[in-house]
Image (cartoon, rainbow, N blue to C red; front, top):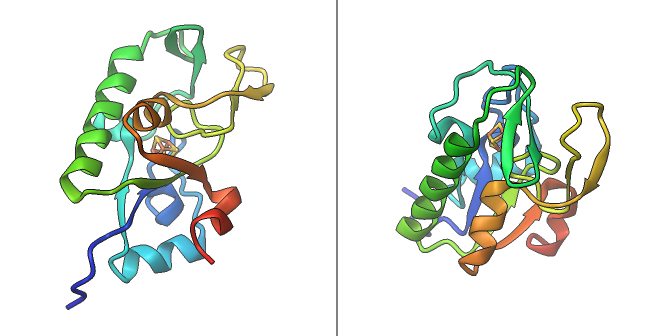
Length: 148
Ligand code: SF4
């Protein structure tokens, strides 16, 4: 049994879970290792918010989150963010490694809301809430910030 407490909250899709909107994962081997050795708690905010797999892609448009079918999914994204924050609190986690460019998990870049593949500086709904509550968030593209 590994007695050390988990240090990181990690996007579930980065640890091999097929929870992305299109039913795929975005596996990063180093993060899978962290998870397997008990150092990471994995979470998919969109699933926690009640969205299904697969689901239409969604993007942030000003204060709302809208999916590619035109459905307003802001409430589900907010619920998923709140549940993710609660999970971090339960484990006393203060660092998160989340999937870049996601409307939930992005930490530096997101899509611009036009569903045309254009990326802009920004952060996802969950990342914003975690940061507002003092949790450091980076992406899988800058692991060296946390993991030497
Ligand atoms: S919400 Fe986050 S964890 Fe879930 S599929 Fe999207 S990027 Fe991955």
